[in-house]
Image 1 (cartoon, rainbow, N blue to C red):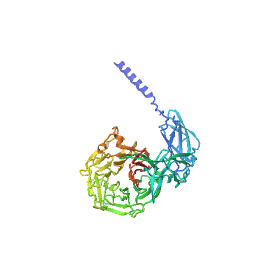
Image 2 (cartoon, rainbow, N blue to C red):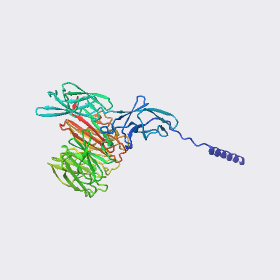
Image 3 (cartoon, one colour):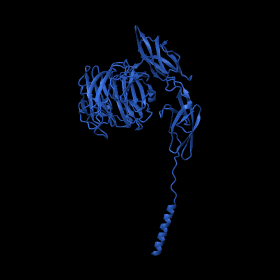
Image 4 (cartoon, one colour):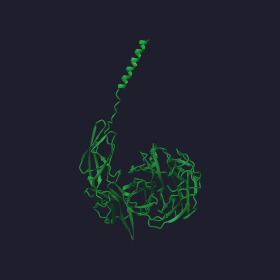
Length: 559
C-alpha cells in the first residue's frame, strides 16, 4: 500500500507541474477589415454628418459629393483641403491615413483598413465639389380677368408639373422659381411663358453641371378620397437651421411660416419660411418663462403656452399671424387638482383640434400621471379657465400607473366628449371620450411605430382622417427618426399588423430615415400638419431634436 501511495503522489505532482507550465490562451484578434461607416464634416461642426458617401458597385471606391457652399444657400465656400472624415471600423482595426482631423481631400487617396489579424482592405476616396441644380419650388401665375390664380408645381424627377383645370388659358403665364442662389436658370424668374406645350428649363450649377427639366401643364385626376401625388419639399439639418443642442421641441404652422420652440428659460420662438426652411425672425413673446410647446389650429392661429409645474402658471396665448399682438386665451395656476404624486407638470406637450376663434378643444397631459387636462372653446369663448380633469383608464406597459413626461393626447373633434388618440412610450391608442378607455390600439410592433414613438398630429383631408406619427427606429439614442402617416378613417385598421396585406392602406407613408447629429437624450421632437391656401395640398412637417426639420407634401391628385 505504501508503494501505491508514493506512485499516486508522484502522478499528482507531475500533473500539477505540467498544469503550472501551460501557456495562457492567446487573445483572438479580430479578422474583419470592413468599413462600417464613413461621413464628412467641417471644422467646428463636431460629429454632425454634413456629407454622406456613395459607394461604387464593387464597394472599393467611396465618393463624396460636397456642396460648393455650406450651408448650400450661404456664401461660405467649402475648402476641400479642410475636410474632416470620420469612420467606424471593427475593433482592433487600424485606419491609414488616420481620420478625424482636418485633411486635404481635393485629390483621390487610398484608405486602408487593417484588421487585428493583419488583413488589409483598401478603398479609394474621391471627393469633388458640386453645384446645386435642384428646383426647390415653382409656380405659375395665371391671369383671370381682373384677378389672378397661382398654381404650385409638383416636382417629379425632371418633370415640373402644373395641374391645371380644363379650359384654363395657359398661353401667357408668369413663371416663378426657387433655386439655389449660386445657380442659374435658362428662364429668368418672372418670365412669361406659354405652357400650351412642354417648355424646357435648364438649371446650371456653380460647377457648370446642368440639369434640364420639362415644364408641363397637365390636367389632374382628382381623387374622391385620400392622397395621391406626394413629394418631399425640403430637409434642413439642425446645423442649417441654427438649432441648439437638445432644445428644439415643438413645431407649428401659420400662413407661410413654421414656428419652433427653443426650450431655454426664458424660451424663444423661432420663425422660418415653411416653403424653404429659411430663418425669418424670432417671435415677440408676451412672457419670459420656460416653454415647450406651440401648436396651430385649423385656421393657422398659433397657440403657445408656458410650462406649468405644480403651483406654477400655465398660460396660453394666441397669435393670428407672426406679426400679430398675442392675445391671452387662459391663465391657470396648476394647483395639482388631481393630486398627482409624480411630476404633475403641464405643458410639455400640447394638442388641439378646431379653431380657437370658433370651436376648439385643447389637451395637455400632466407629467408622470394618467391625467389629461382639457380646455374647450365654444363660439370663440373659453368655457372655463379651469380645465376638465380626465383620467385615462387603459394604461399599459412597464409604467402601469403613469404615461411618462411627454404623453400626447390628440382630440379628434370639438365635441364636449370628443374621442382622442393617446401616444406615450407603451402605446398609441384611440380612446373613447366618455369612458376614457382605449377602443383600439396600434399593433405593438417596431415595424408599425418604431422602437419608440413620440409626437402625433391629426387632420381630415379629402374625405380621410390622418394621424402623423414620429417614429424612432434602430437605436435608443433616439436620433434616428421616421415620419409615418396613417389613414385612421376606418377604426378597424388601427390595430393591423405590419404583415397584414392591408397594412399599406393604413400606414400609407413612411419617410426615409432622418438622422440627428447627436444623441437625442429626451427622445423629443414634433410633427405638425397644415393645408395649402386652396386646400388641395397637405403638408406634413417633422422636427427632430438635434436633427432638423423634414417637410413633405401630399395632394388630392393622381397623374
